[in-house]
Length: 219
Image (cartoon, rainbow, N blue to C red; front, top):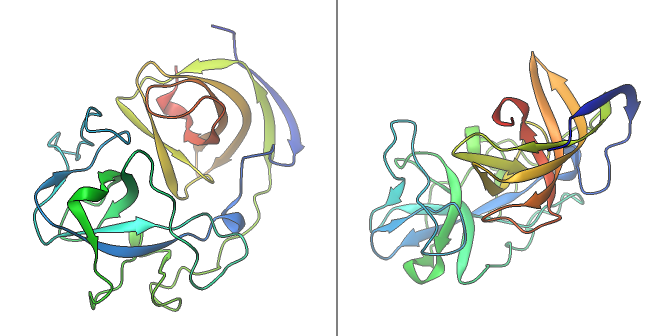
């Protein structure tokens, strides 16, 4: 592995790394037709996402996944849903299920646009694409400043690690223990360091994908 190095000079976020003002995703409620697991990758062979108590995250029949939209830098009121991958959709489990993001088989889901409760995203933010004024998180992101350059390769040490569009923002893929990334940038806030990375090799994320991860989950 190459040693990591940092440069204490402010830079613009490298291509493919975004700030909160360039995310603005929405969610739409989809109902489970049968018991189904939330997974780390778009495959029934992928392990289940684990809750904080170590139990697999599952929907029972009738419970809901908030299916995620595309990244929405133009702040459209009803952005298109993210395309499925190999028959799996990325989304966020809605209450009362453990609030985690991941992949779920589309064959186990159906759209439920009649659900009265809004499909808010993580931490109750973002918004429901049926109701742009819901959840109080539409088009409120700010540009990312204070980014520093970084280089070198790191290995993921966490069992599962969100790859996010922006620091402290929306997850869109998973990295898992042993995946290798190339460091591109650093950003810190409230004592937490975020690393902008490019995927070198990963089990469930394509090579070349870019995003932000929490620094303590890297070697």
